[in-house]
Structure formats: structure tokens, C-alpha cells
Image 1: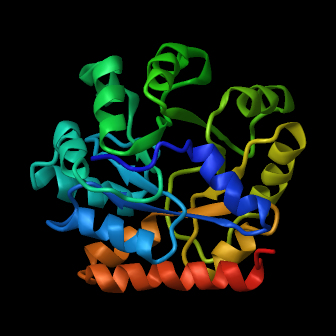
Image 2: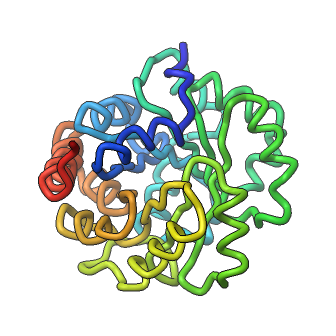
Length: 266
């Protein structure tokens, strides 16, 4: 059936309250035949939640790796309905986050998408192309099904707007580490640390850094000022390059171990 009904934010705050850092891996739905096994494997490796990328043909915010993963998935016949159907029927133990683009949600229908997503274990959404000012209808439909709508903040976000994002977001604030598209980087931009501090100064929501997390070292560095990290491109690159589910999960386990060593829980 579905995963636990605990909200994403409450679940993440449990990790943060003890001094630990959040680790959120990303898996593109349909990238391989056993992609749901990969979701379970990264949870077993220490993920606090898993971001499920529902592929879209024009992913404007995604870099080359996630675009490639989306193309592979779409070529294999993956659809939003199929992704949610394949997730349904298993229990995951942690919340799932659906990351996609608003056009898919709009065409699917707010109520239907929220209902189907909730049944699949989804507890939050990231819709990067849906502006905060236009998100109220979707956020209301999502909330009816226990789904939180996560908003993004970028280094150029003004103080006034950042306060609004921190107030209106649910789950956490997605801290965009640098301007541009997603992708692996050897170093996380210092702007990420500055932005994470700004987010935490204006609200109580967790500040989680995405974009550019390439491995254990960047995960630890990006978590100094933030509450944790999202790893997407680096993980999907391993899958695209032919690594097995176990090998990809081992990469996540390495980041979990590095975060726990650097930021031990009390």
C-alpha cells in the first residue's frame, strides 16, 4: 500500500533535532527496469527521504545528466501514471518526494495527481517551474492529501521574497546552491552557505542544498550551514553508466557515513 503518513517536514526535523544532517537521493522513475528496487536500496543505505523524478520532455532546470536520465526513461515508455502505479504497492519507511514540472501536474489534474501520488507514498512535491504566486491551487489540492509543496530559493532571491518562500514552503526550503542547471560540481558554491544561513534566519523550515552535490566531500561541505543535501546528478550518472543497484546504493551509503561522521547525532 503506502508509506508512513508522517509528514516530510516532521520526518526531517527528527533527524535535524538530534544534530544530524538530511540526505535526500534522487531517482528518475523508469531509468532502469528495477528502478523501484533502487528506491528501496537507497533507503536501506540511509536516505531520509527519496526524490522521485517523474520524467518530462523539456526539463528546463535540469542539467545534462538528469536530462539524459529523463530521455532514457521516456524512451522506455515511462509516464507519470505509470511511475505512480509502479511505486504503489510497496512500503518504503520514509517519505517520497515527487519532482516534476507543473505542466504534467496540470494535465494530469490537481486532484487526481494528488490522490494518486499520496497512494504511492508521496508526501511532497517539487515543481520548479510553478511560481510561488501561482501555486496556491495546487498547494491546496496537495494538502488535502497530506502532500507538502516545496519551494525553491536561489542566491539572487531578495530578502523580502526569501521571507515569503520560508513562510509558504512546506517540507523544507530547497536551497539552490548556484545559478544555472543541476549537475555535479567538484566544489559547492559559497553562495549555498550564505543562502542557507539566510533561509535559517527567516524561518524554521529545514534548509536543504541541491545542485552540485557530487560525493561525500561536497555533501559534508554543503551541510556546514544547511540541514542537509540532495544528491541527484551524481547518483543518476552512476546508473546511466551501468552501475548496479547495489553499487549505486553503496555511493549513497558512503555519503550517509560521511555526513554521520562529520555531524554525529546526540
